[in-house]
Amino acid sequence: MEMRIGPVAGVVLAAGTSSRLGTNKLLVDLGEEAVVRRTARRALEAGLAPVIVVLGFEASRVAQALQGLEVTLVVNPDYAGGMHHSLRTGIERVPADCEAAVVLLADMPLVTSAMVAGLVERFRQGSAPMVVSLYGGVQAPPTLYARPLFPALGRADETGGRGVVRDYHDEAAVMEWPPAVLADLDHPEDVERLRSPTPE
Image (cartoon, rainbow, N blue to C red; front, side, top):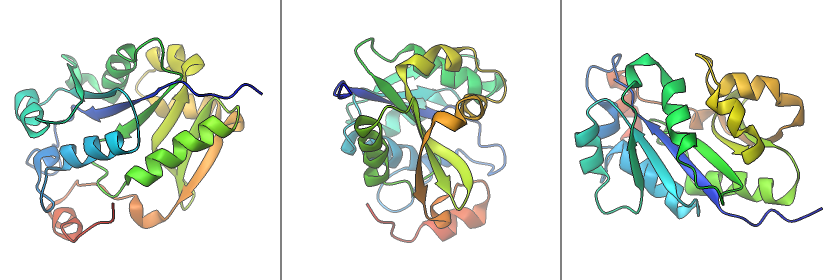
């Protein structure tokens, strides 16, 4: 089997409106940095290159929070139409030499660089077209998609990446993570709970 040694990109989806929280959750400070910056930094630390951050709601404010990081910023003008539009926008910007892309949600602050690197390592060791993350049986990002799946992601409807995961689930490699890592920032109490120090 030919070794998969080419670059793996990162696509960070950071375009949402944070309507349930009432403020832009990507800019919430969980210690020493904004949530979106933490996610992008960990993608970089995992060796993803390039790391493409898809902006939308309050794009200029989110971009400011990313200053100094070696990321590629792209704005999805149709961000209000659903996450699948941001997914398409990000995948379209992945360079042709990349063998795969890891899609991350900017508002999952407990996902570590080691987890992301683990997906890439699993991809390089096998032939699966996709590496999915399971949290106690619940599938959620980060998800690695090999380049042959990019056209399917580009056609994704409202189900977004979930539909592609469903279609190719039988061929996917699986990484298991603790259920507690599956945490986001939808409510004010989530912010307080996640402000405690988190592992790198």
